[in-house]
Length: 142
Image 1 (cartoon, rainbow, N blue to C red):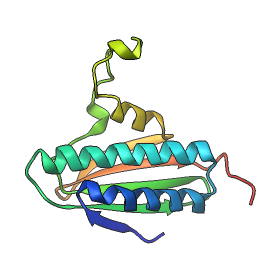
Image 2: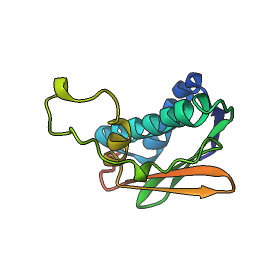
Image 3: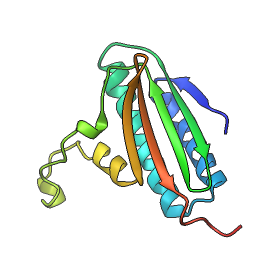
């Protein structure tokens, strides 16, 4: 699948969602897997835009590359924002509390990592690279 490069702004979220859904459709993912992938991509990208670019007074682009093989759909997200490894984010300490007793925020990364089968981060040539993998075990019959 061709890659998608967009500005690192919130206005790009719609194009990123369309790209993610198209990749999931090409992979034949079920609705639940498609939803989980879209949520994960949205959470990662929103954090890149807000924390990696806006709060750091930086500008840049976000590049998504979807790859499909017999076993999985792999989406790599690259940016030139502030270095940030989502796997180092601690789990929210109040997950078992009722919603009204939880602190606002902090669930995005947790939900993103829980929604995919594998996730890894690397810093390559001054760029963050987040890789999300969804197994194709639940392929819909065409």
